[in-house]
Image (cartoon, rainbow, N blue to C red; front, side, top):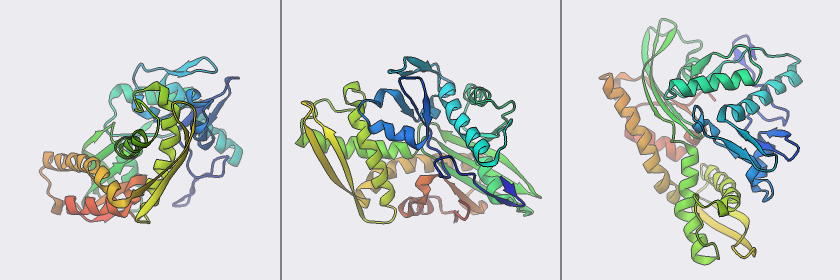
Amino acid sequence: VLRGTVPDVIKNNDDHDITPSAVFIDKRSQSYVGIRAKARQEDENSVDDVYLEFKRRMGSDFKYEFKTSGRSMSPEQVSAEVLKSLRGDVQQRLGEDLQSSVITVPAAFEAKQCAATKRAGELAGFSQCPLLQEPVAAALAYGFQSDVTKEFWLVYDFGGGTFDAAIMKAEDGSISVINHGGDNYLGGSDIDWAIVEKLVIPELTANFNFPGLSRGNKKWRHTLARIKNPVETAKIQLSRSESAFIECKLKDADGQPVDFEYKLTRNALIDLAEPLITRSIDICKRVLKEKILGPNAIEKVILVGGPTLSPYFRDILKTNLGIQLDHSVD
């Protein structure tokens, strides 16, 4: 809600600013969204009834099968559950029945992905849901009070599952996208999976009874779900410390308990993250080159997305882009 020129984030019913894109459906077909749904990933009896990261499948024919309830849902139907939850939180907190919503989408989203996003909004009960490209939304947040004569900004948006790079032109109070590029399969989740696949899985298979442990093996889906959350937590801790421990309680192929502990260092994380960050930097450079703009022509890089909070992440960007970074807006 905008109070004057200051936006206030409306807390959800769990009293948090952010609702994770996670949906759990129980045997009675009751749906749960957010942090409670995400926590169900670690419950052996619920792993086939909870899904995350469905934004990447928007606009596809993929079906999410919620095993216990027998429900089958499209990506837009699952996304609608998240939007319904947010809408309900506003009703609870402010007593307002929202009829409209602006939904942001990656600049790299194609027409069918955008259409699926609008359908999700309609399924959630919004009569109007205009779409706004995420780099435009970011630039508006930074330039809301800006009245510069003319500046070029590069919006660098490294989210959980998608990456966007966009050149914005701020001129006489208006902001416009003049070029963009992106990758709908590049984000913080890929850093998490790199840790799982290149460090954790080799350690587990070398020392314990986990034959065929891999993302493609459905037998181990629950085990990998129990591993991924602590991996993400350790990754975030490394923003402030040199090392962090990945700790999880697992069961091996014979059902025997395994108390797994792995020390993850910041240097090991950087080795895994840097190739992914480099992919994003290459997209930025291409977007600039297409408009014949060098680093000196860009006033600042606007950072968006949780992974960009990490000092090592920012160091890599500054070194490789050669443009001043701006992270003054949350």
